[in-house]
Image 1: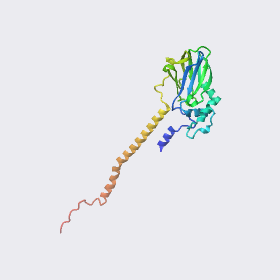
Image 2: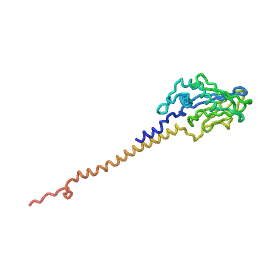
Image 3: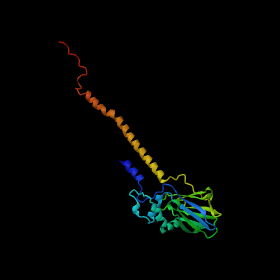
Length: 252
């Protein structure tokens, strides 16, 4: 009886919980002229768009099922893309600074938000050579969300709740990737919640199997001992004083 309750506590999410354990979201950093930087954001899973729409008040909270799941509908992306709350969210969670000075940004949402994402186009005060790009997308919904950032020449960076900024060099109107010291890699000790859930489930199942096996072994071991008194009483029902093999009487 305890095992299903434990598994239920591990697997069932809280109502209106986010879903950060699917495909990761992505951003692409490129240059946009002498003073411009483009940051394009693409969602990882379409249900994340639905969750974001609910969190921003664009979609109704009645979309959340009892187990906390949300079923994505194509109309969710259309409603979110047209909402001013979404544009404000993008410019609040994605930023570019040049020598510590924020660059002004404006939002350009693709017609197909789910597939093509949205761009924030930044205009910096001076000619762009090195900028700091900040991304905190969806980490306010759940700290486990991560963003894979890319630029030309195969450069990569990873944004998460602990690493929100990376420096990028911009040359010839295009980004050539973050500087080596700013590249973000996944920490060796970082275990996602989904991995922890699998470990907990495995440990619980292993303990349950061990308990069942131990009970079975214990009962098998006790069975002969419990049967001995019955056998003894069955064979010793006669008077103990009576000899087992009575001697023949002498003839008078």
